[in-house]
Image (tube, rainbow, N blue to C red; front, side, top):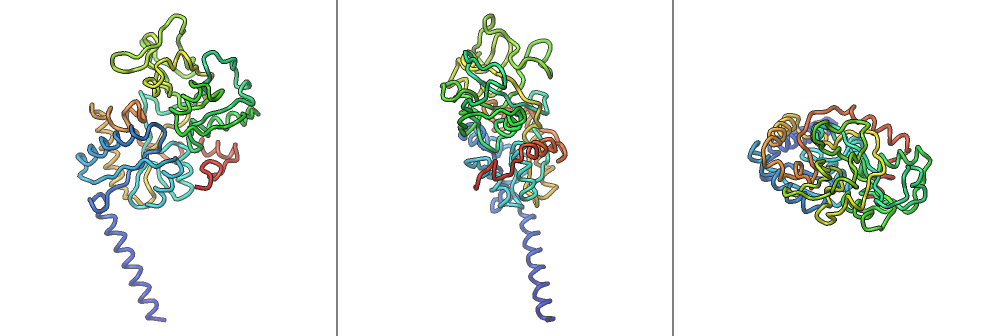
Amino acid sequence: MRKLLVLTAVISLLMLSTSMASAQDLGSEENPIQVYFVPSVEAQTLIEGGEVLREALTEATGLSFEVFVPTSYAATIEAMCASPENSMGFIPAAGYVIGNNRCGIEVEAAAVRFGWPVYWAQYLVARDSDIYTLGDLEGKTWAYPDPGSTSGFIVPSVELGAAGIEPGERVEAGGHNQAVLAVYNGEVDFATSFFSPPLMPGAAWDFGDLPEPYDLTIDEAYINDEDNLYVGDIRILDSRASVRETAPDIIDQVRILRISEPIPNDTMSFSPDFPADLRLEILDALIAFSDTEAWADSALGNEDGYSWTTLQPVQDDLFNSVRLQFQILGLTETDVFGDE
């Protein structure tokens, strides 16, 4: 018995020693930090922008990073849970809540977009559609980005369910861009995707303002010399802007039916056993990087990527409203992610 106790103690010490060594060499070339991006926009944009981010973080911290863009939101959470000591991810609020519940993923910071710590879901329909109210969506075909998308699926599901509205056929489009284009191409009656407020000259857009504060019979939609989407002198920043190259007339063809209540912005989260000191070092490096011109070429700062302006530290309780939405809808993670 005494020999068994001694053997157990030795094994425990060896495991502790291995864990400590692993934590100490985290960020080495042999043990790079794994960085995950959810595939909410074009994967190639995230891959190329992720490389820019990787180089900037390595230069700032001296640590090694490896970038991944999994095939789904679910795969991203699964990968982070499978690497509890060395992974970080840029994941939406719903994905964070699921990851936190599944394996203890912890939030460190959230995005700020053009001064906003929140964003919205938007309902899109064809510009010439006869859909004018939420109730008109009853029985209509619906395209959404991914079942793990907070703005693209979770929040709209809660709102539609609370209103007693049952859409018709549901189409998982694979990303916000694809959901927008599904309406543009006439493949569905409506789509849900993210809304960020437009940039307006003079008085800024505010809560309660129309999501489309312009008149297309007066103002012209166009792409300017800097490749940004405008209507008159108002710059468009919602998900329709991300498809402007594929569909330069997207504003003429697709309108916003309505937007949701505010949603906490996407997160920078870490696997549960990721060292606390390295979390803060990485956050500080990213905040400093967001003040540079190169930020606009990164996966986070690129307006065809995540469109983050910067980051700010946040606490877990910010996401209690998202947890409440899961409870209201009665959603489990299997309902959201399936059996992956």
